[in-house]
Image (tube, rainbow, N blue to C red; front, side, top):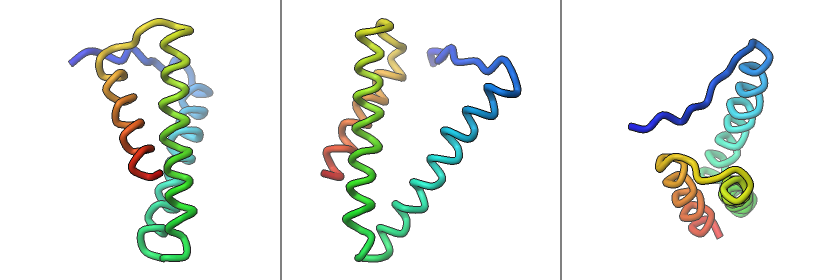
Length: 89
């Protein structure tokens, strides 16, 4: 499997990644779970999922043009993000 070549060099970098990715993803996961359980939250959860996944895909596509082609693993993630965004819409 190809390496993603992502490294964290300091405590500050690790803290930023854990808060941004870990904390934010956990919050969205709670919203998605509640949306699956409560009809009143289903539409807001789907809108959030569409926005969440489409934003990742757009960001990665912009990065391809700005930074070059990433590893096949990252390219595969783009495909899944687009699929999930489309399914939520």
